[in-house]
Length: 165
Image 1: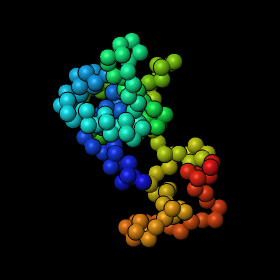
Image 2: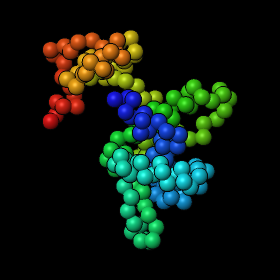
Image 3: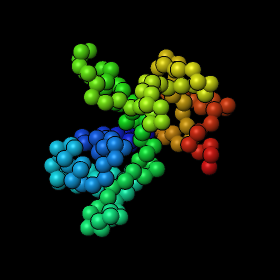
Image 4: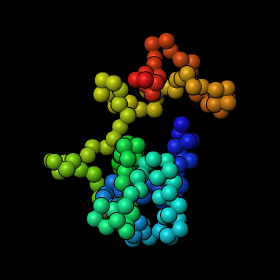
């Protein structure tokens, strides 16, 4: 699933467009100004995000001649990705003496968000050594061949994607 996600989101500019949509940008010109991106590249990326149902594309309510792009529920579900990558970059991709240009804070309190972490159901922070990759019902021989870290399914484990269905 990571490879399929990267196929869509891993292109240069794509997550920056999503980030800017979270920051409130809605119009083609605003994205272009913010990112300094070529018009043809931005047009292609926006079209892919609309096709993937991460953004919607509709006439602007105030000016029907302009097009407005907004995040869908699927797009808003990328918030943890945007926050985590921003926090990772702040920690690992800048010089120690370089001040942060921005960070994420809770709107109501103004409190800066703590670094995101992988957590167990009981709230404990988990690390790579605490995790295993478990084979799910959608496993194929082709995937199994390239993922030697997989373990066979455990009878007590469920597939959370299909559990609610």
